Image (cartoon, rainbow, N blue to C red; front, side, top):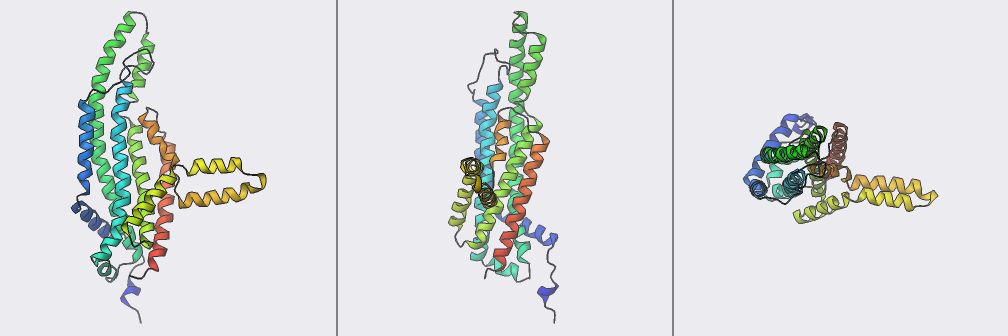
Amino acid sequence: MSSESDRTPFFSPRRVAILAGNTFTHLIRMKVFYFLFVFVLVAIAANFLKLPHTAGPESVGGVGAEELRLLKSPMVGVMKLFAVILGIVATALLIPRDLEDRTLYTILSKPVPRLDYLLGKLVGVLLLIFVGLAVMTVLLDAVLYYRTQGVMAEWMQTADILIEQGRWTAADKESARIELLTHGVTWSLQGAIIAIFLEAAIIASLALLVSTFSSSTLFTVVISSLCYFIGHFISDARDHWLKSSGVGDDQVLDVASRILIVIFPDFRPFKAVDEVVAGQALPAGVLGALAVSAALYLGIYVVLSWFVFSDKEI
């Protein structure tokens, strides 16, 4: 005899999409987007407040590069803070809240496979983070473009004076102009925002895993935050262990460190975001490697979440 659950497909993108949409709507009703107002205030303050910057044109970077960097830094920092906090807290709230409201019983009794439920919840959180970052990116680009035009106009006047004085050549002016533009709106900056989203996706999937065996939202938030903190130093610790180990311990420590990097995601490669804020370029290959890394972590954590949640009695 075949039951209704036996006829239920193992995985349904349509079910995942419906659950993701419901999760997205539910999170918006929780007014998590109020965090955007903080970003708007930071953007307005950064745009209209005259930030201290290196005004001397003696450096090849030119006038205004430091001002643009100081403009980007707090705005990108708020974006990263928004993505990480939302990835942890929103994910940590989902399963306990569904249990408290008895929504989880209704969903799973339809029947909806637990894998679809977990994926739907995670995709809903990631969709919310994506939309929030997209809104912030538009504002960041607008403010940065406006300020770059003003800085560039001031810089051109200074550069022309230096050329008339014989202190600069036309080649020096062009080199400094290109250097200044690297601190404005660039494709590397957009790639850095994508990297922030990928980092948030990793920590959100890890929070999902923790929430499947935790009965406390606070416990999930604390453990996920601790893992995020450790993830920024795990590679440095691994390098230190391998350098200080004996000859016979190399293989053992290498295997142990690789296991730790699975448990605690390695966030050191995502420091490329800070380099972009400083004016460096983000190669497409580096962004691609970050995307592959994020996909692997998401796959591992979702599968582990499914295994744990499948055996959990609701």
